Structure formats: C-alpha cells, structure tokens
Length: 108
Image 1 (cartoon, rainbow, N blue to C red):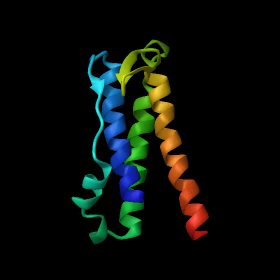
Image 2: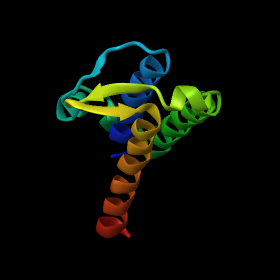
Image 3: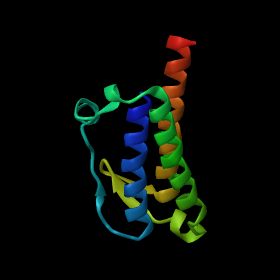
Image 4: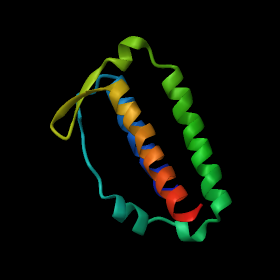
C-alpha cells in the first residue's frame, strides 16, 4: 500500500505541475494494478518504502508551497469534469486518508 501511495502521489503531482503551468491536457487515468504488478515493492523493506514516500511527500509540499493563489485557481479537465488545481491537490490528500483508514481498520 505504501508503494502504491507513493506512485499515486508522483503521478498526481506531475499532473498538478502540468496544470499549474496551464498546460491544457486532460488528466488521464492509469491502471494502478499494472503499476503495482510491475513495481519492485516486494523487494523493498517497509522502511525503504516509507523513506521513499517521505521524500516524495517533501517534494510535493515544496511544490505546493511555491504555488500562487492564481495558480491554485487554474482549471483543467479530469474525467470529463472541470477541476481547479486546488481541488485536484485536495484529492491527493483524500487518497492518502482513504488508505490510512483502511490500514488502521485492517491492521491496527
């Protein structure tokens, strides 16, 4: 799950970067199961996965902190819906919260 969360954040932040630069590209979908199947997560320790996530998150926070109010209002398309960059960034947080909840319910 940690590896999936890291992959997801990398992809979403790349999309956020494009949107922040007013690249009018539709925010396409991807096959998350194929990403996991073709990963090396099974060869990494939980500590390695956790450290990778922390580094990706730190880069995400740095990027977000540099955004202007105007950039946060930039609109793009995601699944045939108009969405602002700010809304898109909130969805990234929601994805993490979803998986943290599942981990707590199943394993803690």
